[in-house]
Length: 176
Ligand code: SF4
Ligand code: SF4
Image (spheres, rainbow, N blue to C red):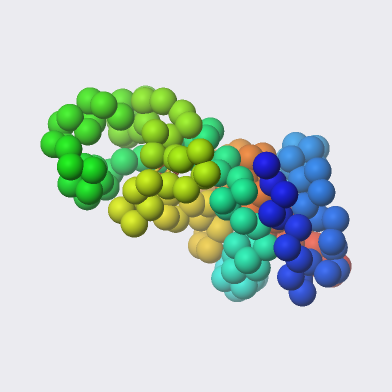
């Protein structure tokens, strides 16, 4: 499933094994990630994120993964619903009834996973109008991981981009 991950970039050359068995390593290193996020220097982290985020997306092929679309529902905000229902030619109410439910926080989320808009080839059939949450996921280019630590930690267990960025931040802190 994750075969496309081994497209190495210059940044990877220092640690070509980083993505090998990443799910196992991430599971084993949750405590270290938590400690790092607790003590992280916000300004230093924010400075590194744009480049690390870019490096992660150029190293990891989301089309070989799609774990987020298979395991995690985005929130569908009212503007998302308006835009997507128009795109798929449905009334907003029918769209909600067909695809969405309200979660415990009152957010509209998918009734079922994997997402109904995910194709067998891992392409999103509503890509151009997808929910903002999908377009922003995994939120590695801003202070999300510092503000929403439990979610960032959870994401690191199924999203290799999140894992990659946190590992790189820790390596930089250790001077590796
Ligand atoms: S954002 Fe993360 S979980 Fe989603 S497809 Fe890309 S690498 Fe996989
Ligand atoms: S809308 Fe598209 S990007 Fe978002 S979860 Fe569904 S398939 Fe994935």
